[in-house]
Image (cartoon, rainbow, N blue to C red):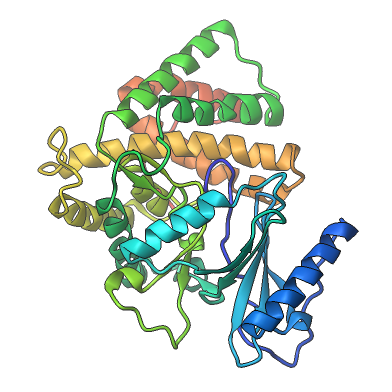
Length: 384
């Protein structure tokens, strides 16, 4: 989830990447004028890129206003069309970050055509399977190879970072994201009214979270680096380097900020959870790669994994609270209730982290009051 807005998944649906005997699923339109504009634009692109407009079908939904369609090519294979109404979506960051990632050597969609005024974009197709689709949820360690491939893309992305290229993931952004938790999750979803003392506690907790997360090194931050946004390439894809084994999607809201964010996002996923031993194993492997790349030269992080891991947990806490607010907003404001089903996972993440740090003890009590739970007596991730 690029937050905000949240955008799982990327360009995938499980639809075949080439024509099949099954009629394509119809694309639903609520705006006849936009439908007409899309069909005219696609017909024009068909002549330039060998497309078969009649095969256009949904490829994925998005938690923003973007939609993705898959369309077959006459000579085989397929392309992806992004439908991003310009009144709601700005595609310039997508194009900028796609170019940046491609220059770094990551496997990302290529922009084949772009009608910026209308908000239509043609992309090459990175395949129909996300990493989430192929993970073995019952045997975490069977997935280690996939997570190594993810790290092989993540560390080069971070290593290429330069200040001033992407907008800053600064205090203002972190605080704005955290405010989604009381505004949407507590007040709107749970109907919970904070007392003055509880509000003061929340303010103090947020100040601590922000300070901890801004203290460390800064890099390029994908902001939704998780299995649902990483693509398993089709059989005919030959990666030029380990960084290109997996395709990377949903990067349009990338910023320049905490080095801990993307590894926290990867291992504390929005749609599945791992036992802590596997989280630790992958995070240690990331730590080893990142310190060799010179990304962790701060406050003993490159020598002490424990110090780095604590920073990852504090970064994860910020993300978890933000996501709770966004999932509530998606349900209550945007009419997308499916995301709220995953809020128990994030409450678990929040409680587990708060239970580990003494200064978060009062905040844990507040969370337990909101949720009607007893304080945790131990720590375990658990699969959900």
